[in-house]
Image (tube, rainbow, N blue to C red; front, side, top):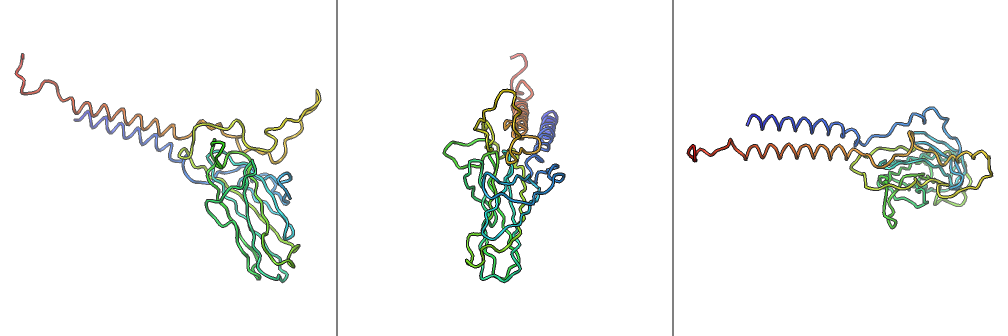
Length: 273
């Protein structure tokens, strides 16, 4: 029994060590973006998908526009991440003629509108309100999905901000918009088998012919990558959980065999039989 207790204690310590390594990887904490703090924050927004202003997770972006304009930004979101987009619209100080409803939409690299899992992407601002705040938390981005599924996939994500309902007299009034997006790593619990051949980013599926010796044109701003590049998709902390489970099962089997095996010859069997 002393041997069994020693083996079980070793198994528990080994499992705790492996799970302790895997635990922080699954934490729902925002991914820091070192480059976002060093790059200048964008002060303009695009007016379509093609002219969307590129931003990075954790990097605030601002824009001055007119009520009724469509404002577009784009950012990279990798597999295993959950993105949360917040937008604050500072409304004009001049007297308005009624309430205004603002809406925040997020589209993936295929320009499919992605539903918000949490948050308030549509909100009405009262006639005398000074600002309105919108938020949208997407589902966790998957490394691979069936062709018929609408699952969010790694690549570029477009943020669109606009007003959808207001009095006709208030169109064209100046507004100030601030948008910021953050990503949180969801860990191996959200990992899937299989990966895309390439992230869904603009221009990934089209080739531009160039003459011999021509210098490749710079990549569009919308094709920015996450810090450290796109993940390969094959590694996740599920490997650590699998290894810990296998080790605990093996040691448990050895301990069970030692208990059931006993000390050898039963006492009721006479010597020499």
